[in-house]
Length: 116
Image (cartoon, rainbow, N blue to C red; front, side, top):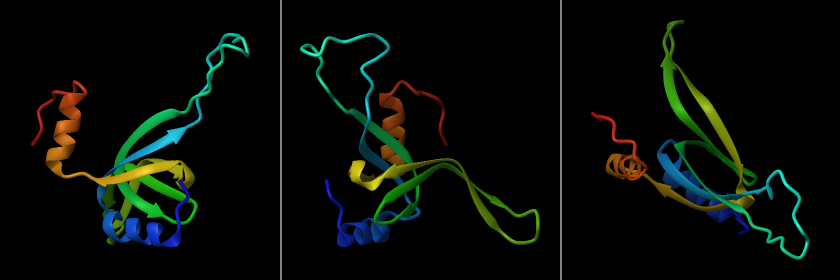
């Protein structure tokens, strides 16, 4: 999916700084064994990433899983970790996540921890 500048600006305006779910495609390995060429079926890995959207431009989209505000030097410096940078050509969709969406996503994946 080719992203034009209008798509990039729309994503930036709607989602920058928000918690988002990104649906994207990645390379996929055939595994660690030999595969017959006539039986080989190429495929991509369908990926889902969730995080704070901190950057989007014509080439990449970047998420931080965690954010913190360091106030140790008298000013506030926002820091994030870990980061993932996804090539924009691999991005299929970007969705904003509400707190309810996030909780539902966790429960659907067996992460039934207490939440505030």
